[in-house]
Image (cartoon, rainbow, N blue to C red; front, side):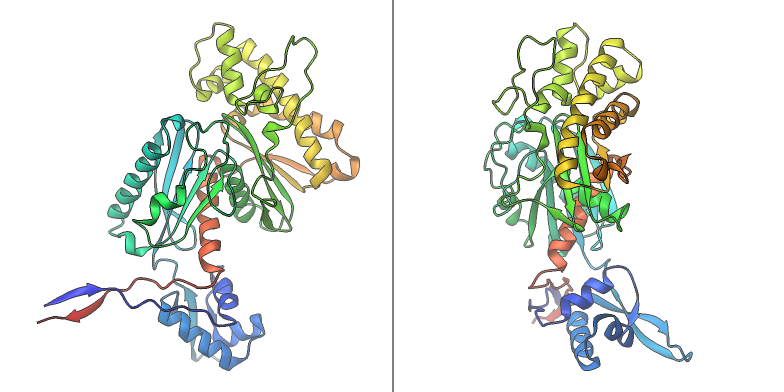
Length: 406
């Protein structure tokens, strides 16, 4: 009789391996000669590194023709050799996806949640859906090479824990990576949602743009920064948290609104989705979710429109501060409230151009997020792939072997 067993793990850690894998992960199919020309590595080094990547299952042979018409050995990244599991968790809903090793979404599910139910319940739902997605793909935990979780709160870069998250009651310093490590023997990456969205938009829509600002206006307000083509997290992971910048009290208000972070006068307390719900409910309107507020805006309800237009100007002024400091080429606006584009974008644009330096705005573009509801999942998958395949040691793809038994 025979039974499946995993190939013994070995580290793929030689110099030049990452350069070759990074080149092939773009989707190109290249011969060894082409790889040597692109990387500057010697032919003998390329031979050795390709052999190691073939042995690890990360690269597979692919048919090609030489320039003289004779068959030549060519190689491609084995993007179908395993899976990445990702979850984009929001305040009221989450999207969970199964992706190939290139970060391409293969299957997904969307669920309504209550973030304040706490990490054990919410992450338990994520783990259940991960298992369901793997079953539908005829795969299992052994084929998963990376797990990614994005959350609507500040994430400590070193630990993957959220720290004092304003809209994630009960999650402070919870060990999110540890929740999944017993089931999945692979890296578990936790990222702020706006960072994941920024990374996804830049890599899939604006790959030539080196400086990008992603602003998410949903239940809360946050942003992600791409600097020199790379995600900028800051020293500890707190970069881009514009939702808690102080906004001077607008004329006509008797007091500064209290924010969920514990301060008063934060941008989010004026312009976040939860603040919009607060103000609409105070006027006796029947709204329970941010999506309800968006539908009310689209119907032209005058109180909702007035509040949105006031919020858009405050958002634009806060974004203008970041424009002056960071000088992005592209500003991408996403999140649930961005779906009411007619009521937000004009005010945001006007304030940015009025409050920013002419040098910073002369070539700037302010656009709606292209990836829509999939922005977080897509960006998280790409971040996981980057983490898994650009660092030593590289993983090995699980390949069952036949073991004889008496």
